[in-house]
Amino acid sequence: MIKKDIDWGNLGFGYIKTDKRYVSDYKDGKWDDGRITEDDTITLSECACVFQYAQTVFEGLKAYTTKDGKTVCFRPDLNAERMMTSAERLEMPVFPKERFLDAVRQTVKANEEYVPPYGSGATLYIRPFMFGSNPVIGVKPADEYQFRIFTTPVGPYFKGGAKPITVRISDFDRAAPHGTGDIKAGLNYAMSLHAIVDAHNEGYAENIYLDPGSRTKIEETGGANIIFIDSDGNMVTPKSGSILPSITRRSLMVVAEKYLGMKVTQREITLEEVAGGAFKECGLCGTAAVISPVGCINDHGKEIRFASGMEEMGEVTKKLYDTLTGIQMGTIEAPEGWIFEID
Ligand SMILES: *Cc1c(COP(=O)(O)O)cnc(C)c1O
Image 1: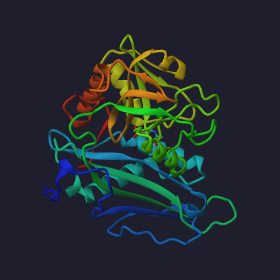
Image 2 (image 1 turned 180 degrees about the horizontal axis):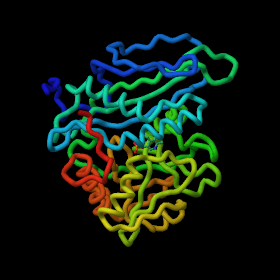
Image 3 (image 1 turned 90 degrees about the horizontal axis):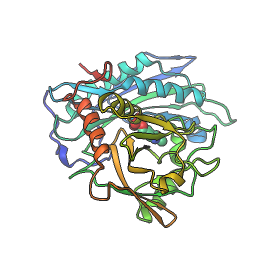
Image 4 (image 1 turned 90 degrees about the vertical axis):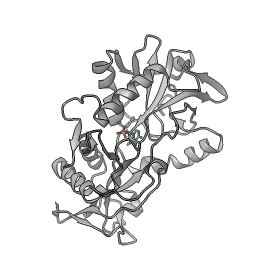
């Protein structure tokens, strides 16, 4: 496979148009057969449901090259299932799991020249999404939809090592109790934009959202789940119905327990216990960075500093990071079904 002439190591996280994308349309109650196309544009009515009422859901995953030269994705079956859940919550038709996996395979194969080589640190980011496409003015779900997957090559998340970040406790809420916090919908991101711009202006890398019901418990950031390591070296992660079920976090729970012999607990975590020093390490987890170490949480001027410090990733977090990335890259044996080969 001849790869595109791209400086993989210096790529950022921005959109770069690749050659092919996958499209399937839903009309008269059924999905069509789907196709690979070169057309990166979409022409819609000004009154399409997605524009008026934000009826859209998405996913994010990566294709990359393993040590033995295979092009693979990590647990795309979980992305397929999560997108089904997201679609159902917004009254959209479900794109079947087998079709989703086939569409991922087709899209990656069609753009194989953009899958970065092993060792570059770069990956081919895959963005499946779905939206209501026909005109809707009275509030109701659309009748027609489009499912689409495009890809874009992205650079190594951490250039020159993963430096711990400082995050703040947000005064904004991310998701209401019994709302849509547990699905991957664009609407959850629209309302986070002001909060993230404000956080960046104030010098923070991210916002930690509290549970909007009582504003006492840790939920997650705008686009990543949170893990803590307690003083015994065990993993504790928040439990709440309004957290998006991160595939990275769910995988790290398995890695911690099965590969590293750690105890893993998912429970309500109060800001008070975090401030009281219950945890020695903290990390944000998601597909893009796998784990971003958190060195400090700023709670309205009060600094909660983790023992792992601001220089490098905490010791236990690093083990988790190395084991999961090793599994992904094929240097550590993966649990059955975690690695999805493209060809
Ligand atoms: C996508 C997302 C995550 C991370 O999920 P992964 O499956 O690990 O990539 C976490 N939180 C939110 C709000 C998200 O949208």
